[in-house]
Amino acid sequence: MSPLLKISGLHTSFGRGEDEVKAVRDTSLTIEKGETHALVGESGSGKSVTALSIMQLLPYPLAHHSGGSIKFRGTELIGAEASRMREIRGNRIAMIFQEPLTSLNPLHCIEKQIAEVLHLHKALSRNEAHDRVLELLDLVGLSEGKSRLGALPHEFSGGQQQRVMIAMALANDPDLLIADEPTTALDVTIQAQVLELLKELQRKLGMAMLLITHDLGIVRRMADRVSVMNDGEIVEQGDAGQVFGAPDHAYTKHLLAAEPKGRPDPAPAGAPTVSAASNVRVWFPIRTGIIRRTTGHIKAVDGITLTVRQGHTLGVVGESGSGKSTLGRALLRLEKSNGEVTFEGRSLQGLNAKEMRPLRREMQIVFQDPFGSLSPRLSVRQIVEEGLLVHGIGGDDAGRRSLVADVLSEVGMDGDILNRYPHEFSGGQRQRIAIARALILKPKFIVLDEPTSALDMSVQAQIVELLRELQKTHDLAYLFISHDLKVIRAMAHEIIVMRHGRVVEQGTAEDILDNPGDPYTKALMAAAFEMKADDTGAISA
Image 1 (cartoon, rainbow, N blue to C red):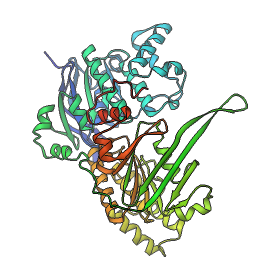
Image 2: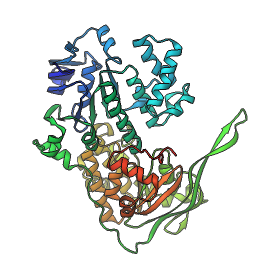
Image 3: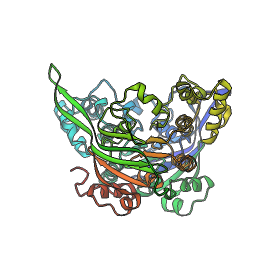
């Protein structure tokens, strides 16, 4: 019996002649009916290009296949007529993309976008399509979406947008689902729910899945077979148990060793308090009606008390929308708040921008998206140097250049990159530049807002190790915000667990991670470390 999908000797390139970039080289793999085949590797390895080659969605003729074959149910897809590909795409082969917001039409409501797939391939009536849309939203755990069928994509969270994408992909019960980093934008609890859903649908429909991810924990749980990709080539392939249990290729061993591990070095005892908050509240008004009367509040942060000490890392965990980032911004006075916020014993409440400016040297932030947080119009030197100019530090041009080169070297970047721009670097390199920008002012307190979430697993491990070393060298205080509890375990000395703007549990990292007390915390831990979806109601309650 022939496989559902067979890729043989695939070569995919962009451009021609001297400008040709060979993205995929001599790649071969097969997927059987009902099988989950994981394609793993770091960013730029060729995983997504392989997936888009299957769907024939590359920018042809700029992209071209110099060799190879892709057969689905015995039908050759390379060079297939457009009408034939339209029959297959969204019907027999569906795809979930990594970035849901860029994949959804910003001008169409979610009902119209999901129903479009049904109209094209099933010729359902308007009422039939409406009923099917409701069924699909319920299937992917977006039952609240029933009351928001007319809402546009930007009105949903990242996780909700991804659920809409999954609903679209599953609309026609495809034979093969290509999932390109389907859980990257989701909380750990929702990740577990979505993965469990996909497995259940596989069992029910006999659906095969090509799972593209850099999260090896997901691969361990989901995959029957694994292909490891590096620099456009598959370097190792086999059953999941074999690849994880006895990897053969050096690159596979490197990936397996790269997951964030261990615990942070013991924090210094009796360290002074750097940043503290007492009963901090950040409420956003809900305004309705013609005169925009305030009818309620979104309680993003609702009465939180915490302390961050010198040389310590306070981890803040919780699902999207729990108030983690808002709390971090409130501590830096980037968000107005009620309650008491202090820095080294000095109250920050009521200080204007001019009074806050000298303190800005001492407190910095590193954002989640290393590309979006760096100006594309500024060189690396200009980005890192900006704080020196604002605060009048570093002396003359030569002195500032020397300081910039020194701090870049400290974060593992060469000094010869000063005149290059952010788009010329990988995600991990851009995040190192963002860390250098924060460090150059020699702060005492840094808020790290999901600094590793957009990075490959191996790069995550490098950034975690870098942050640990910098903390040890400079005695830094960190507020580390993350939904990735593996990273939190490797970084945090104390942890607070947030939900709906409140702290549901607080204590040392050992106590929270090893002996969680609150049902919500237990559900988070099970989802993060065991990839078990919550069945107690703690998450939905």
